[in-house]
Image 1: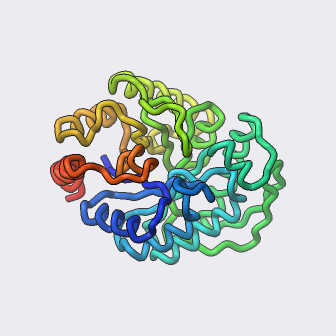
Image 2: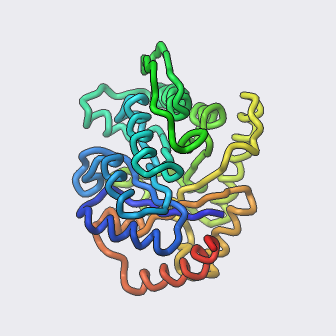
Length: 307
């Protein structure tokens, strides 16, 4: 099992840099930035520019987005950002997660709202284009949403490409993951309520219920992989621990129970919010007690796993 951390792009930059240096010292496998644009107090910085800076602060940890949304970028532009950072970091350190994003992002760019099915078909189209460009292969794609003609592409320093993660819970998005991605990501069976003003502040119910829902989705993904001619075992299963119940950082035992439950159903990587999601959104630091528990659990479990 691998472990990572997710931050919002909330300033000041110096605080983010200190946090990521700490995550690296604690031996987390990866750190991610949630991707949004120009939402004060939630997304102060453009994520891929920010990642380039944070890469210089942390020479080892894998970095990337969870997720870059299809609403904000043409896939050829996103591929250029990812490949640029792949070269800046020397290879092996960059991953890109993509997902549907939030309707408010259309408003930011002055783009008419998209219907839910259109968003998902755009996700599929973006995944197809990124899958090719990230390998350093040219693309000539007619659309319908992203006409793309790229004759030459810088070769990635990460082979065969920087990992592509598709976050999805519905059939169309999961099919895109099965066809094009290196890894699939979901919210660990928790109901979705996100954005600058999350609709769901309390998360879901029991750990057992969340794991059961994740298992259901993963088994559905198995079937979709078979439909598209892919061996299901070649698609990594990962989760973002979205408002987990109970708090896995309340104790080492709680962490072991949380991780063990997902490990049993084939989840190979878990990304945690730290500071906790509510602390980040409300611009407060975790309590000293919470920080001390976090340090103890990470030292007992995360650091040990990396040795």
